[in-house]
Image (cartoon, rainbow, N blue to C red):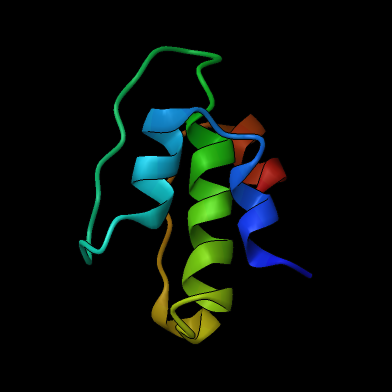
Length: 70
């Protein structure tokens, strides 16, 4: 799998959030804007590109819908 394919479906701001070198990021935007997609792709990026272990990543969401996607 080409890890850069996960960026193809994201807009510029989402790509910026996914590929950020910051350890912690906060994404704030309106409903339906792709926050969950960015979060899921951020987790993929951290695991596939940055080689983070799954147990070293914590993701928080506040909706049942986002939880089911994650």
